[in-house]
Image 1 (cartoon, helix red, strand yellow):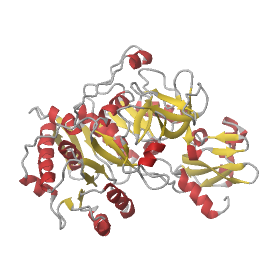
Image 2 (image 1 turned 90 degrees about the vertical axis):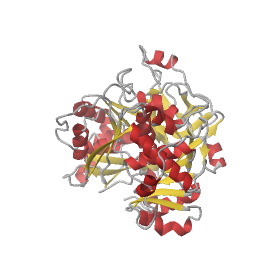
Image 3 (image 1 turned 30 degrees about the vertical axis):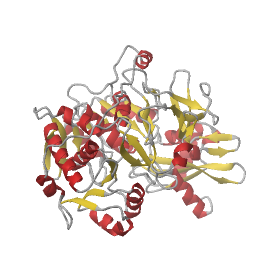
Image 4 (image 1 turned 90 degrees about the horizontal axis):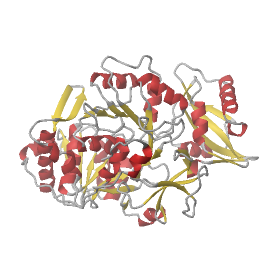
Length: 540
């Protein structure tokens, strides 16, 4: 657990990892808090109303499901898919799987059949827990999944009914004494390039996440905290940045996720439940920026963390005006998450920076040869092993696992720089860098500049072929509602960048769009835009 000291440097110096030899996520996040007091664990809101589930009930229900899974033939090490949205059964399923020593496979409900088939097939999942809404996608691919022996479905729908079967099971279960290094979880990468890879994590991954949750959430937990995120629990951002750390600390989590993110509804929800802590992805924040007078009666926010795309000064200023606090940006990836973060209460937030290394993690900018580069020099962002937050491997892909390392440095695949004060500055993915003339240009600075224009809601920048410069900069702009695209507006945006950054950084091409391709976690898929340009065979 991260303890605050007088300064960032002292907080880092006095931090020590305490990872026990034996550790089980299910026990740590549930059973140890089930003390008979019925302290709240989940607050669940849906169309039917609001319900609260205590840690005591969470223990009973996860024990029932663990017994049911064993009766269905699930053994330690087996993979169990969870295709459900934010709801109590999702949390119960995770806890049950961890307690019996199996491996959880969270699946995003917006995945289509192809995405589901790859993950279920590649992982060799033997059982899947889902609901009637998502069942047709599974039935359409069932013949391609010979290892998927059982389905448990909320409401039945021609399959064993999850609730009815759990009701028959005992609520007494002896959790498996797992080692901290035992596998617990596979989260597949969002797949911006190639087929998604399965990042296999050990039970210790939860402990590895804790300081990276506590820092951006201003030394979470504090009395009265209640955590919410619109990010789906199928992803590291929802599961390992919010749900499991909150339950580990005995802090209740609000479960509520609309089918489509509604910024007005998000502000209402947080005020109605007096949410104190939130993880709000940049995409959500940019949409929330449209809301006039965002504060509502009951507003009680204490901390907001965000990560996935770099925020600029304009968004940070909006956050202060809208929430009355600093947005703490953090950085990580599915394979090694929450390794860099801001914490306004401990050190100044510098616009455009991802923050400083989270205590416990050795993060550096290195060369292709694995040498630590001096301050200010661009290179590969990397974290040193061993580190409890780091994945064990890519599931059944030893070559891909080995390719993530240069010596003992785990390479994120992102480029950036570290300044003299220890702040990290994201430049872009290796394949996002634009080579224009003699310049290597990261899209982040340009996007941060363009989004400050009053007419712009979202933007993505890529390099496109140019006969003189090798690549030219092109901006895909999603205008604010009510703003009509025009050649004059494109020229205005170009001048806006040229005047604020540099002549070589302005977009020579501007295309207005009605939507931008996003990963399931809300990050812009620049590769899709590059592929689209390649298919066109010309610059438009």
